[in-house]
Structure formats: structure tokens, C-alpha cells
Amino acid sequence: MPRITFRKDGTETSEAVADNTNLVVRAGIRKFPWPHLRYGCGMGKCGKCACRILAGAEHLPEPNWKERQVLGEERLAEGCRLVCQLWLHHDLALTQDGVAPPPVRATPTLPPRG
Image (cartoon, rainbow, N blue to C red; front, side, top):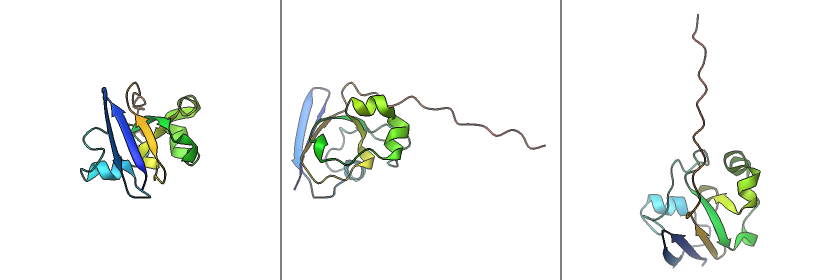
């Protein structure tokens, strides 16, 4: 079972989770790391669950297209990932301290029908 360590606001919580766990799904059903994890849509669109990986990144898959689009290459290079896109199989340490969600992009509007 992977051990997940989550650091936020000066506190550290750690717990073993089942293999193939998604932390946003667990937070949504009020399991670890709830209430500490900031998250939103759970689908890789909003970026609210952006975290910096502190240890264990070598066991994660390559960032997917959603992470590349929402976070961009610079933030990915800094160790940021979207937690909603990760299904965990190994120990991992992560934080949301100093990791702001990406800015909200304006929704394109359609021209009036006429």
C-alpha cells in the first residue's frame, strides 16, 4: 500500500492508501487527504488540485495532455502535477503550499445568431 504524505499550511499528514488510489476521489468522499486538499472539477480542467511533488515523482506516469494544457511546461518542470489525473501505486510526498491554481481562462463567447 502506498504511503502518501501531504504538506499544507505548515502541517503534514501521512496515511497509507490502497493501490490505484486517486486523492481527489478520496477527498470527495471525505477520506484522506480531506479536508486539506484543494480541488475542483476532478477532470483536469480547472487546475485547483495542482500540487508540487516533493518525493516519489519518478514513479508517476508522464504528464498527460490535460496537465500539459492546464499547467504548461514550465510548471511541470517545477514538479507540479494535477492530483486528479494521478492514480497512485507508490509512496508520494506532495504539497499545495506555494502552488497557486492556474488563472481562470475566459470562456469564449459565440457571436449572436442573426
